[in-house]
Image (cartoon, rainbow, N blue to C red; front, side, top):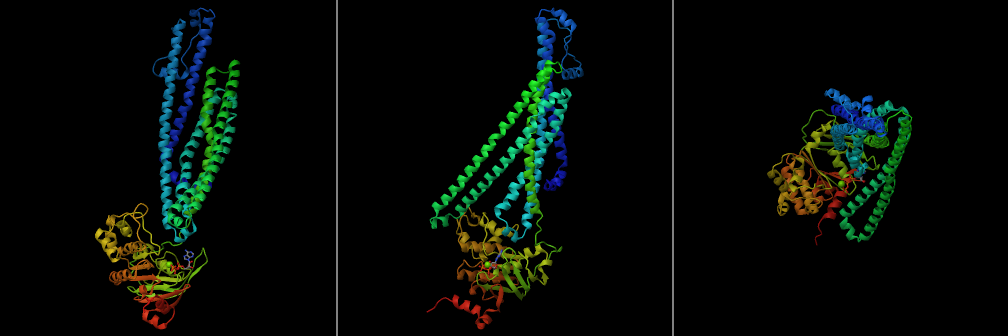
Length: 627
Ligand SMILES: Nc1ncnc2c1ncn2[C@@H]1O[C@H](COP(=O)(O)OP(=O)(O)OP(=O)(O)O)[C@@H](O)[C@H]1O
Ligand SMILES: [Mg+2]
């Protein structure tokens, strides 16, 4: 329950709507409680007309005498309304049976009209309740989703490694929608419940306290039963839900891995696994349907019991003269009216419990403090000199020591190359420069400022980072290239594509730059993807450009073209090239050779060749064989 307190500021934000909602709930219920009063009064008039006039006349009394001695008036509500309109219907001038029947008919008709009017008003206010409270819940849902999305963007990479994507998606979809059930329906029905009970039971007690007790006795059992059943329904529908997500995750895996599946001839196995999961889904759904089926019978049975008790006990009280017939009718209506509020006690309780659990998860998520946060107030124009001072990094989740004692300095405008075996720490080092993570030892400085003290948006804005695993959005090629820049012109986009040596490829597609990529678009070759991703970084004209092994899928000739273009574009700017290939790194101002997280050699190409160490060895192996 405590977790839901986090939502109070939102209620406060929309307090106007909430207050109106309160008012409308009250009015809705007031009219709902009033309608049976009209019915009861109508029946009472009929009963009076019969016992006081018709029965004696039928038994042979003189009608003139009967009418002279007694007077029949319109029921209280109608009389009150009539008085207000200057009209008071009564049996004053009635002298025959036919006239009496006409009089009673008129009263009944007017009562029916009043009844309809009451229901019309109830309907209108019930609509207004939804317009205020349910709309409020949607607005809060929106705010909450925005807060969560904001937090997604603040969280560090490590967070995404530790949490499954599906889980993260659930936070914003399922958890929020459960919380919304509390904000909207639970609040609305909770209010309805309270006002309806007070109003109805108040009216009932004023008529007959004993009968009230008997009529209401079975209803708490209904609340309890509904609570038990809905708790089970929730548990089982959760089981169905989770199996369903498993099923769709599996199907998605099959779809995206369809080529691997076919290549390894695993279609049959995949089908069997799918069948197993689908069977489980079926069983769980049947389980759910079984408890679901108990829901209505419980309600109907206990309401039926209430109704029977009302008629039986009420009948006894009418015989003893304590009560009028119309009151029994009125009570039966009230028992039915109270069905939903009493049933919803259980339902609302389980809604609130669910919402509370979800909100607890949301709160925990929103409370995660991003490890990498901006602390510097002033923006900074990145120039591009880089220094590593005794930098070390241990990945917290795996405990892997990825970097150890890394120190080097690079002036602005120079090119740094990092070469080394797979798993030697190249990507990790490159990520430290963009502050995608923080080192566990030592400091990284840019322009002589430790990264922790550098304005983070300025840093990221000044760096063009081409990651090792290319990611392109399901969008046009032009939009993919222009991703990092607002309002890039077509000419700029084309120039970036030319510099990345991918313009000719793009021009060859039927839709050119407007070609759609991704699921419903064309598939690009690995090298084309890499070059589009390079064009995206180049377009931003960054002060520091980082290429993480992003020339691996292009041939050496294309590589040479791109590197040549880079030299022109990156004139006076800093570049970091990560690669396995000597051909990529040979022209760099500083080459770092990494092995198991340490710098084993550093210097320029010639010096390293002369040293005849690891670099020279790599160089020899990568020479084209000439014989
Ligand atoms: N997010 C991570 N969490 C835990 N360990 C990691 C993570 N990323 C990398 N590592 C580990 O850190 C070490 C260095 O990895 P890194 O990705 O920096 O190597 P690399 O030199 O870029 O390799 P490659 O040439 O294959 O890209 C590896 O042992 C790797 O398993
Ligand atoms: Mg790497």
